[in-house]
Amino acid sequence: MKEDKRKNNGGNKNAGRKSKSEEQNLIEKLKPIDPIAREQLLQAVRGGEKWAVELFFKYFYGLPKQVIDQTINSSDNQIEIKIVKPNADRSNK
Image 1 (cartoon, rainbow, N blue to C red):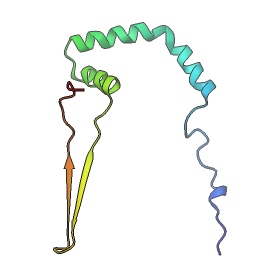
Image 2 (cartoon, rainbow, N blue to C red):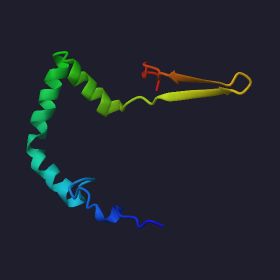
Image 3 (cartoon, rainbow, N blue to C red):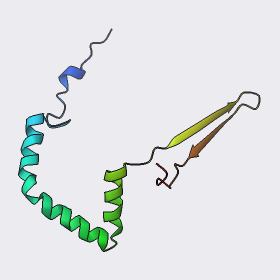
Image 4 (cartoon, one colour):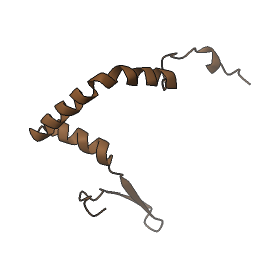
């Protein structure tokens, strides 16, 4: 059997999630501009900027879930796949 050489490929040392201390340092660096960034986003939303409204809703409500309904008809040897789009009206939550 061949030897697994994946352990020798090194990989990217900067890939993956940052450590908690690095995340905390970044948060502390960005904290002073938090009120400025929030005000700019608020102005963009009030101005009707599409990107700002999308950004707000993606963070506030999250992205909608996609549901895939798969049906296999063995008598016809056909596979039917339906992609059901989520309900756009989230006000009923």
